[in-house]
Amino acid sequence: MSTLKRKANSTPNGTDAKKPKANANIASFFGAAPKPVSGPPALKFDKAKWVAGLTKEQKDLLKLEIETLDESWLVHLKDDITSTEFLNLKKFLERETNTGRKWFPPKEDVYSWSRHTPFHNVKVVIVGQDPYHNINQAHGLAFSVRSPTPAPPSLKNMYIALKKDYPSFVVPPNKGGLLTPWADRGVLMINTCLTVRAHEANSHSNRGWERFTQKVIDLTAQKRTRGVVYMAWGTPAGKRVQRIDRQKHLVLQSVHPSPLSASRGFFDCTHFKMANEWLVNRYGADGEIDWALVPGNSTKPVVEETKTVTEVKVSEDSKFDGKTEVKKVEVKELEVKDVKNDDGEFEDDEEALEEALRLAEAEAETTK
Image (tube, rainbow, N blue to C red):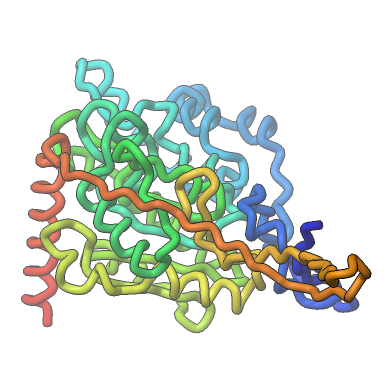
């Protein structure tokens, strides 16, 4: 008969002083749906009343935010999106649409990061730069692409680093690059700019997105008081986390995973493992991020399943002689498939990214 070694479960947010600290929730090891991580009490927000107080122009310009920005974020960002700068950004996007200029991601996906990772669930923030600018690529999460689009080169390099941190990590089949499982587990993947004109990298930069996304990052640092891990790869991302209080939060910086720079330290940065070690220390075992992307796979510690087998020895005259207990531990081995290079689809994106990184590094050198 199979039995599992278990530890007593406990309150995940640690608010009940009479209960033991949460440090061994067995369900988390088997990829159970992530529990919301507690934080400050949710602000009371009457969305309908707030919308009713907007002018007609504001309602028209902010239709996308009203309908698709998760309410857990809207309550904190409502004043920012009614600012003159943000409304001018929305007018710019409206002009882009009205003049037939296609832009990405699809409108309904611009704020998908907010719905996959509600404010009260944020434990890790990965800072991106510009959305992918070709068809069927960007969908609102930095570095992520939907099937059948293959994982871009930077994401493939992230897989390599992950594999070094967690040998159990299995690369998604069919060159997959969808990172929504991470987002659903508390990893906020947000680009500095949230939109881009089709086939024109950085075409929506300096229009207002930078201030908005900086506010998103700053909010997590100010109000996620139990602590957040920030992963900032490359000089531009590093600038976004300069004001983070490193006594309260963990800031992990490295070169960018782009092929231009990954070989200069990214592969061995151990950020994924360092993030989890810090989160477990802050939140208990429930705080750990499962970085797996393949169903049935997990990067969390293996829970050994033990089986007790009773062997009955029978003497030559068929009389009962005794018994011994033998414990066996079954360990499953996971097959890891290599991903073939197929980066042609992202050549323009990578060239634009590498140019931006070169400029940022050059600027950093001149300011020393």
